[in-house]
Amino acid sequence: MSKESLLFTPDNIGPVTLRNRTIRSAAFEGMGKDNGPTPMLRDYHLSVARGGVGMTTLAYAGICRSALSFDTQLWLRPEIVPSLREITDGIHAAGAKASIQIGHCGNMTHRSTAGGTPVGASTGFNLYSPTWARGLREDELKGLAVAFGEAVRTARDAGFDCVEVHAGHGYLISQFLSPYTNRRRDRFGGPLENRMLFMQMCMEEVMKAAGSDMGVLVKTNMRDGFKGGLEIDDCLTVARELERLGAHALVLSGGFVSKAPMYVMRGEMPIYSMTYYMKQLWLKYGVRLAGRFMIPTVPFRELYFLEDALRFREALKCKLVYVGGVVSRSNADRVLDEGFDFVQMGRALLNEPDFVNRMRAGEQRCGCDHVNYCIARMYSREMACHKHLDNLPPRILREIEEIKAKG
Image (cartoon, rainbow, N blue to C red):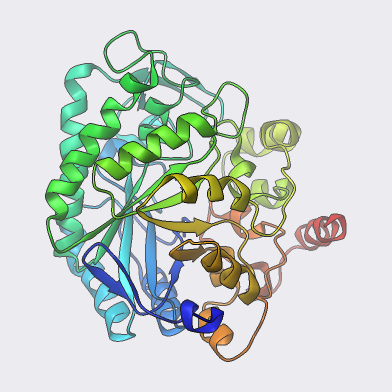
């Protein structure tokens, strides 16, 4: 089969058929308000759907109050179903499928956002929030697993075709999996077999709720990205277990937001741009002083996860979604030729929401220059490409040019 025909042919994720092999990745948009959707969130995803993507993913929706990191993210609850329906109806009218990423942030939050002391796999201090978190009691875990299932049912009510369970990047499920964050002495700690128990509980509830009409993807790490975290062999064990539990597709990623954040996205974090939008003065100037040490640069290269992902492709039979450094038509074709079933893009579809249609028309490369300004501002404001904004402060423009020069 030719490269062109493979990229633009349909394929399925469980019971859901996508019109082509492209998916807008679950990159946090920061476009919510009071933990609900906004016209900005709707308009962005509709622009991606109209731009030709097979499926677009609303990102980082919390399954309950304690799951929330920001007031700009979604809290997936019945009260927001009607406004989510406006988004999914529009996506479907444009010919695309709609997915929503569900998860729990674990210790990546604050009391004021989470409605109580942040919780995690184990008690400890999270420098990146920064906050103290308490370890979850064993009797609380079943309730959180059930909340994952309820989130799937709410997603169905809101018109979503698929859910993407976030089991990577150092959020709650990942905090149970990683020896770096799981120091428990009960049956949910210790060897990897035990550390996977919470993930198993959550997936059993998710698959039961998904039934026969919803697709289930799971974002899972291939490495945590630092010494003392999960390495590739352990992550292969996790992926095999997710396959056994019935996941229809795995999104292969890596990194840990509280330890190796740029392992996820690669490149340099624009520290001045990041702190420019922060409201708390102590945090603004603290990050300016220590940000380079807290968020070390990990060099960007195209298809930066491909080498590790190929090991997963060799070991697994389920559908696999490649994400990481896809910026051109040749990237997308290569990934599919290597045996992956779908390709996810984040920054490329922020820079050009119609990049899929552009590729179909012959465009070879998107205009993203990977300076990561979009990521730097998303923790305080909506994610946006610097190329789409007017009147940026001169210091931010200078930082962008400095990062581009290094690249």
